[in-house]
Length: 80
Image 1 (cartoon, rainbow, N blue to C red):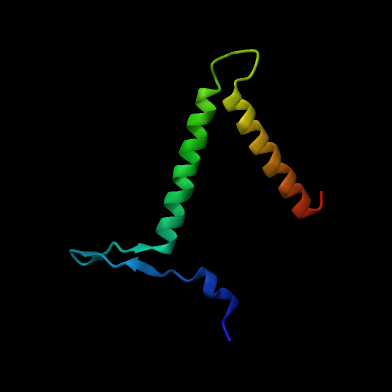
Image 2 (cartoon, helix red, strand yellow):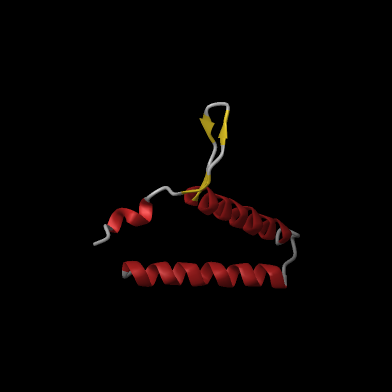
């Protein structure tokens, strides 16, 4: 039987050892890079929407729709 904690195991995907330090690329590294890239990407979209226009741009409308979708999804999950 597999343990439910197996999903949290750190698995080295590319082992790299440099001057006695373990600099391996793991599943956690890949997840962290994805989260950072997504955050930077959304941040740049947010800066693009700060042009000061009264009528929102298409980019801002898309970001607001994504935000509203995520908020609604979270509210459904927590039962609010």
